[in-house]
Length: 456
Ligand SMILES: Nc1ncnc2c1ncn2[C@@H]1O[C@H](COP(=O)(O)OP(=O)(O)OP(=O)(O)O)[C@@H](O)[C@H]1O
Ligand SMILES: [Mg+2]
Image (cartoon, rainbow, N blue to C red):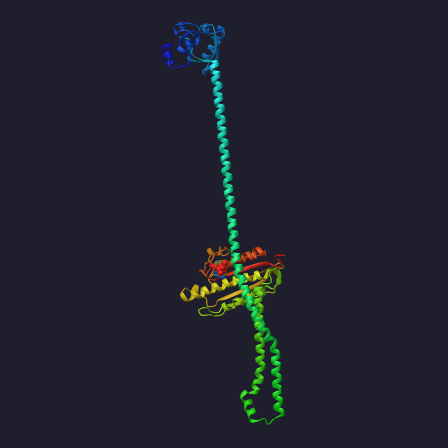
């Protein structure tokens, strides 16, 4: 770079710049240098750098040599001697722009910077950096707080949703229980009422049958005595004796009384069963015979098992094992038997209707039956299985049968609470298990497992 080129480019720059030779001779300076020193630019021409500074010639030469031999900027400090006699400490940055050669000395560009200004700028810059760093920190913290709040909000929303879902489930469950309880209690009350109404007259009949038989027997004996003692009975009596066929009457009346006794005993059995089913008086835990509960539920459903119109008879095959008495809420267990048996009958009836309306062999069943099996699993558990050979349950439906209000039946036929309540009763009230198995098209099986001393 020639001094002219330097001047050309230094002219437009606001900072003080000097072009000096390796020996310290000023080759060119720009206006800011002159301003700094309080001189005119012409006055600077041809001067040596050490004439303008307070440092010794040696120090200045050493500094310039360092600049000449370094590729990087060399930072130094020069104290300028101003025209008005004052001094000005400057930071200088020197860089060689033409290295020394045998033909020409090296050329060094010096950039001066007022120390106080620089340091105040530096302080200002530092302040700015500090402020910026603080701002960045503040933003980071705000962002973190926001993220945290967001996270907390999400958790809260999730918790709320879960709580709401739980409440909804509980409400649904309570609703199903209420409906079922209402249904069962009116059914139970009706059954208990009927049982009571039948029981009284049947008791009279049964209680008097024995006397009636004895009286009849006595009267017949009297007739026989008459016959023996008065062989010449008047014609009118003879005719009457022939008409009523006394010999046959004597034979038949015994049979008649026997069958009347069997009949009334059967009615008493039914009454007992009805009472057993309703068990209105037994909300408490009791030790009961499970088979009696199943039989009483069957008794209530008896009318649906017999052949009717389009439905063939449903056979009930009982495979009862020797079971210990089970500690349970008997009225509730009876509800479960009733629900599962009623579903089995529904499935068999649906199949019967299907058989009449379709040619599909898979959907016909000429031998509708319900198999009830009981067994002891071990000394602590028993199992009751109720299986039908009805329509069966698709896998898709099977996963939902215990859900409250799930039904595949038409309005009025099913409400979808039978199995959900049964599940509640078996699993939650008795600590047992209720499972459903099915081969679609072949039938369904419900297995109840309960501990012998479940709720103790
Ligand atoms: N033995 C079975 N065979 C075929 N499907 C069955 C059987 N038992 C239950 N299901 C299916 O499970 C569903 C739910 O049964 P659940 O007893 O809970 O309700 P529901 O019988 O429809 O109505 P509700 O019992 O309240 O009168 C039934 O709608 C039916 O689709
Ligand atoms: Mg049902």
